[in-house]
Structure formats: C-alpha cells, structure tokens
Amino acid sequence: MTNASSIEARDLVFGYTDLPTLDKVNVQVRPGELVGILGPNGSGKTTLLKNLLRFFTPQSGHITYFDNAQERDITELTSNELARLASLVPQRSGGGASLTVYEMVMLGRLPHMESRWSGFTDDDRDTVNCTLAGLDIERFSDRPCSTLSGGEFQKVLLARALVQDTDALLLDEATANLDMHHAVDIMNLVRERLDGRRTVIAVMHDLNLAAEYCDRVVFLKKGTVRYEGTPEETYLPEIIRDIYDSDLYVGRDANGIPFVLPRAASTGIEAGCYEVRRSAQ
Amino acid sequence: MSRTVITVVTLVGLLIVLAAVGVAAGSVDITLGEVVRILARRSSDMPSHLQTIVFQIRLPRVIIAVLIGMMLSSSGTVVQAVFHNPLADPYIIGISASAVAGAVIAFLLDLPDYLYGVFAFVVSLAATFLIFRLSMRRGATRVTTLLIIGVAVSSFLGAFTSFAMYAVGEDSYRIIVWTMGYLGSASWLRVSILVVPLLLSLVFFYRHRHDLDALMLGDEEANALGVNVARLKKLLLLIASLIVSFSVAFSGLIGFVGLIVPHTMRLLIGHSNTKLLGVSTLAGGVFLLFADTIARTVLAPVEIPIGAVTAVFGAPFFIYLAARSRKAGLL
Figure 1: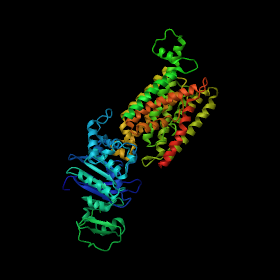
Figure 2 (figure 1 turned 90 degrees about the horizontal axis):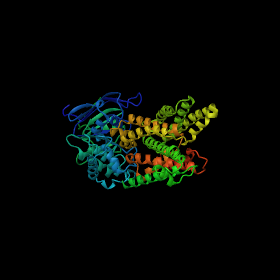
Figure 3 (figure 1 turned 180 degrees about the vertical axis):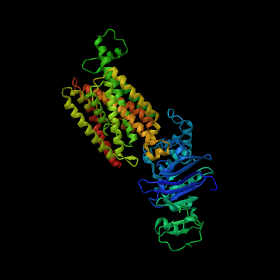
Figure 4 (figure 1 turned 120 degrees about the vertical axis):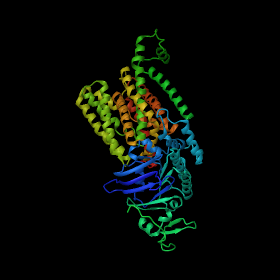
C-alpha cells in the first residue's frame, strides 16, 4: 500500500485436483526485499513459486510484475519477457548435469538472445565469465556439472540465474541439500545482490537460515497465508506451534535474531510482547 | 573445441573414403581409380555401362545411405533431448514401426511413391503423440512406461504389417523390405525427395539448438529460461516424426542408428546440442554408409538387409546403455 511493489500475487487459487493447493494467496514483494516463504511440507510453497514463474497457471487470481515501474500482468508477458523479469534457482537441476559448467551458466542468457540463428554474443560470454569469476567458480568452467560437489553445483545454478539478469530472483529450496557453511555462502551471495530494484523470493525449510537473511517471511499452511512479518515479529511460540503443529523452542540470540530449536518449548520466551500482524484471515 | 574439430575432420575423411569404397564395391568390378576418373568426367575411353552403374546406381545409393543415416541420427538426438532420456530412439519407442504401418497403407491403396512418406508421417505422428501423452506424468517421462508403450505400439502395428503381408500375397516382398530395411531402390528422384524434409528439419533443429540444451534441464527449468516448453516439444516431435517417416518410407526399418551415433558422439564431444546436433548428423551419415557397404559386400553377391547390420551393432550397444542407465538409477 505504501511503496511500489515488485511482484504481487492477488487471490491466487491453484489446485492439482479439486482440492486447492493454493487458496486465495496474497503475497506482495517490494523492491529491495528478501522475502522468505516458509511452512511445512505440502503447504504450497513451491506451488506458489511455480505459479509466479507461470509453470502452472492459476485457476483464478492475478500475478503482476512491475517492470520499470510499469505494471505487467503475467498473462500479457511472453515466455522470454517473463524470463527477463524472474529467474529460478532450483533445489537441484532436473537434468543437464552432463553439460559443462560454462554451457550450463550460459543458458541463463537464453532469454536475452536476440537471434536464434547467430546464438550467444561476446557480451553474453563476458557476462558469464564475470559471473563465474565473481562466484569463484571459474576454475570449473570446462568441467561437466556432474563432477562438482553439491555446494559447487548450487553455485553454478545461482550463476545461471544471475546471468539471466532479472529483477526478481526466485529460490526454490536452493540451500536445502547443502552443508551449513555452503548454505550461508549461497545466502550471502544472494543478499549481496539486492539493491533498490532487485528482489529475492526464497522458499526455505530452514527457519534459522530464514531468520538470519529474510527481511520478511510469509508463513503458508494448507495453501493459505497464515502469518507474515519480519522474523522478529513472527517467530513466536504460538505461531510456530500453529504452523508446524508441534511445540518447538523459540528463542532470541544476543542480537535479538530469533531461532527455533527442535525441542520441547516452555522455557526462555515471554510470549505476548511482540506485535504480530495476521493476514489473509 | 579442438576435440570437436578433430571429430568433424575425421568424420569427413571417413565419409570420403567410405563413399569411394561404396561406389567401387559391387557385383561389377570397378577400381577406385576408375571411380575417380568417372566422377571427374575423364572417362571417355571407358565402357559406358560402367558410367551408368556409377552414376545411376551406386552414387545415388551412397547418397541415400548418407541422407537416411543423417535423418535417423538427428531425429534420435532430438527425441532424446525431448524425452530427457538416453534410451529414447525413434526405432525403440515405436515411431518407426508406426511409419512402416503408414507406408504399408499407402502401398495397399496403390498410391504413388511420395505419398508413402506422407502416409508414414501421418500415422507415425499420431503414434508419437500417443506415446508422448501416455508416458508423460507430471511433466516428465518415465523410462519404463516409454519403453513398454513403445513395445506395445510396435507390436500392434507390426501385426498389422504382417497381416498386410499375407493379404497382399505375391507382392509382399515390398513390405518385407520395409520391415528389414533396404537401400537398393535408390535413384536420383528419391535423393531429391529425401533432401527436402532433411534440410527443413536440420534448419529447424539448428535454430533450436540452444533450446534443446535448455530442455535437457527439465521442463521447469527450461520454462524459467523463457522456453515455451509444451509448444517446443510438440514442434520438435512433429519434425522428428517427419524425417523418421520419410526415412522409413524410402528405406524401411533401420534401427539403432539414432541411438548408437548420438551416444558415441556425446562421449567424444560432450552433451551440448549446439555441437552435438551437427556432429551426430554427420556421423549418422558415415555410420549408415559403413553399414550399407558391409551389407552389400560381406556375403556378395547376396545382400544382407541393412537393418540386420545396424541391429548387430545396435542391440548390444542398447543393452550396454540400459545397464549403465540402471546403474545411474534411470531405469
């Protein structure tokens, strides 16, 4: 309502069958924000992302992208236009592990290709080389992706999304398979990239990683948005209990950043002194 | 890059040597020297029947072998990318068998030659989309389903073909030839009919070489890279069926080329379709020319069906690939 948004989903309804997987979901992402989409398995997090990328078409509702302050309904965009507005870092690549790192990252330039006949240009090659160097993976350039470790490969997928040069970067559990230090590495790289224009939407499992990196989180459960706000606002025992149906320990570290531990709650938190904004209810 | 260059140079060299051998070999002895002189039009002193044999019989046959090999190999490469599946080959998943059924229908209706290709195309297109639909689940094909449906479609249409063979009676040698593969009826007319679909498809595939790489990543990622996945896959399958049908209508069932050749080339130059498409097209021409030369010479003057030759190389290779895919958890 106040600042302009970057992506907006309004009253999104989508279902694989009669039962909606997403039921009137409203999400708004403002420029410069890193928004985490959280919630238990089957809550519709990944489905929401697939709708935002038009891999699935919602049964009703609207998705709007803001391209240079210009409102564009997702249905008006061509596949290439959409791929110049939003890029995806998947959890692991579905295939193509036999491509070299360079070939894999180069595919991120596909939506910018001007002519299918002449192919990639020197500019594209420069962009790819710079990005590979920036992520410190240029030494893998000629290696098949299948020979990389999980952390290295995830950087390759991030590089591919970065060379796509989009305002919105969508992470689908992009750090789920990684050791803690690699996950932190990826999230740092993602954060670094944010500026007044770019945004990140990250579907995440790890509540603690989300608390550290997200400006705002959206909690989904059974296809509806139950809570949204900053991690400080939303990481409360009653909310965590409501979302995950289980008593978890919610605490604050010395800097006031919340954390959640998988053990019975009861100690340490005075409930009720945090402002929580409920939404979509 | 240099590996690609070495591969291409080797293939071109092989193509030239095999073409010369292919023109020289046969029931009438013509030496390589004579072939060169005839082709260079320096043969006024030689008997004219030799020139006729070279120009009207052997040269078209060599060219047809190369063209058919290119069609089978390029369509195999593309079908593998569309199904994200190393075992997807038009022959194995039933596209070729349905093309034979189409050609047989045209034959039974006593239609002209070029309509064999058209009928083969129509029937194989219907079969291809049936196979595609049935083997897709949640945006991915399942290998086992694909193979089972391929076997079922092939058997069903194969039964139709056998039935037609008995129904036709005396003339059935035409149909037998289709089921085993035969390049002997080569002519310049047939060369010119085959060149058209081949060139059109290669241009189309070349234009989409980068999109094919994106398709290898899986539908979701390809979609996020701006590829209109459903539409592109349909177009690619349409074009692949087109060339498979024409190759089958003109030379019968020649299996495994679209499987062996792209795979060997992947081992040599990597998996990116930007290079693979061109190289495996060329290699397909070389391989089928090699197979045809063997088919004609090993038991000369008797000719072995070329489909039998490619199967001798292809079937063990298929088993090897299947074993490897099983290890990788794909099967």
